[in-house]
Length: 305
Image (cartoon, rainbow, N blue to C red; front, side, top):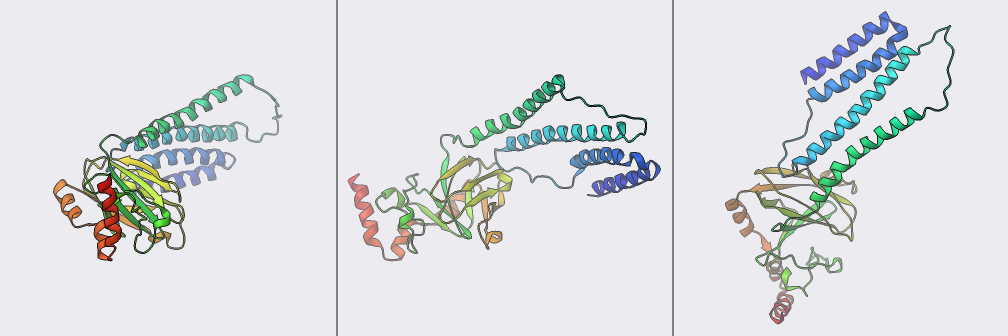
């Protein structure tokens, strides 16, 4: 912080001195100082990303590559402006020169722009392909968003999430689980509470919203995606260290958007199994509100299968 602050003060002082000493060249010098200060501040900034906590460290690499490409363009354009302001400053003896076309310059700019765009897009497309290509053995977690909190659903002992239907959602069945699908009986339900996941276990995050647009974001995992009503989106990650991480909604979703936060805890095997054993299944929730007839109906269908 002190280095960055000292750098800003030094640049302001130098710019002021040069501006007073050479007023006709002050703009050119200020532009050059802005470039120097911007590059220096990038390396000495007190603000940077939090330590990555998932397998998506290559997302950081892609962003850094974007910084280099856009930074090079920024420096080139500003230095050219500084040169032009200095080189073509007002003079009574100078006459303007008009050159309508320059094919060499146009080709050079077109090729450089194409290379720059490719450098920006290609790494991102590669990472995106990996981001949505779920590996075998990944565990499923459903995240259901609504104004203004998060609900989660995990598969039970059968390892399969039951089917859901928005038309089934009510106070007694907040997840809209389909009673015609017996795989949903042992699903583990977490309503408005912290989510726990197992370290070093790939996780597929299935995202759905039941009201408006949301966005499920865990900064340390470098993982985020929009949640669109009526559509199930997904991505995956592997947590690589234990810890307590904040969940944010990154899409404005109404007056309570600022409070739509949650926590995800990455546990070792023992701690995770202990937490999992304390959670309620869909079957247990239905039994607690005397919906045993619906449970029996689902069990009968499971037996028929």
